[in-house]
Length: 336
Image 1 (tube, rainbow, N blue to C red):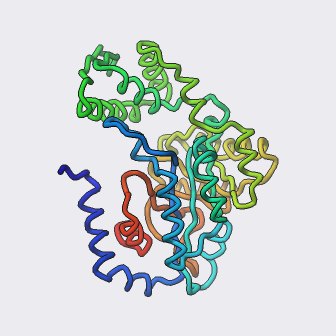
Image 2 (spheres, helix red, strand yellow):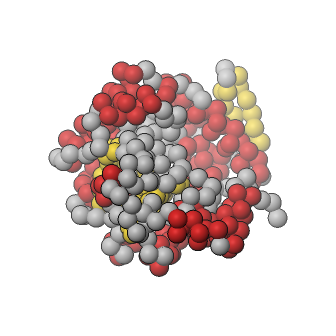
């Protein structure tokens, strides 16, 4: 049996839960909360090469998660309520807020029905270029090209390179290599590279990206549910630490303004994209007028002023973390 890089940490969290250490932490940390971060919710499929599986949780696992949280006496709250509790004295009950990034269409079709059935509030953070249909979700065609072909050729660092991709192990290694390379490119260079790859292997980049993400009509339908909070994100999802102050602030403000115009409502909650988030980014979020901003950094939300509403941690939960016992340990503050 080959353990993933997540396995030792997951085993340690499992042990902590079984040993009773988690129960002690839960008793000491009454009133603390957590925000859970999801991206995609869809039925799992069989197959060896599925790099996107790492960001997917199956609907039935989401349902089991909700049941486990409620049996543990955890309150499931809105973003507004989570922010309110930061400034309030510690309460007796712990709380969790569910959030979804990317505005993926499967959140509407697979997550929302489960959450509605259990009357659970949740938030969806919308990157506007994705919903406008003008963003290039480059990781989707990259996965499709590698899945369909046994040999891949492309221009890599101004050289024509050739890779074998007949075996699952080769496909996984090639995906990791090319995804890392593409992430390191400037946006214009990344666009040229992925367009070249799609042209070579006859993949419709625009159609693939469009099919994965909700359009504005679907976002409006979701926003009509009183259990749903729509938050904004940047326009293109670019890492803010690679932009100067003016560019970063423009991405944040424009993302909010476009989404507010499309939905005809105020959107005071924001999600930082990937990349380093520091004092500068927090100050920009304040300048943009946001009431809250969530990060990709793990950790707990602490009451009585113990957390900053403009730098809220979130615990990612997806296909890499299948154990509900391990999640309980993280919600108690271990492994964040």
